[in-house]
Image 1 (cartoon, rainbow, N blue to C red):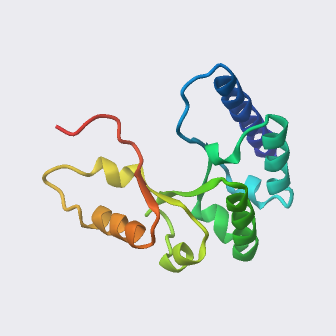
Image 2: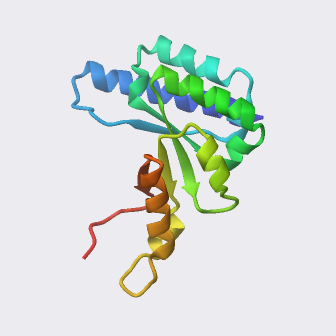
Length: 160
């Protein structure tokens, strides 16, 4: 059960640091992505907790991206959709993390209110001149056709 207090601590710390950066005038123009575990997301008070933390730290929710794996969303799909819609209505973006690993359902991708899909690092690591890029290209195409931003995990250097 520690993940609940750890998850809350991560949100508190993230929002506190973001508030400090903004108050110091740092040119922060991006988003702060926060990973959420399935158990944390499943809590009935998850959305309320986030709202309280954001209000306490006076954070514009547009700065935040909530990252969830498909596993976190499948436990109770109706509840997940309801929570995601609320978070998006507040201005947060929702990212589906580790897309392409485990159980990935295109039907769920269609039904979930998402903004971003993140291609798992395992696929990105395999990209080089000698490998077939079909799977990654397909994921990118699906994301683009669904008007989702597509992010490649694990890009750590410029290609040669």
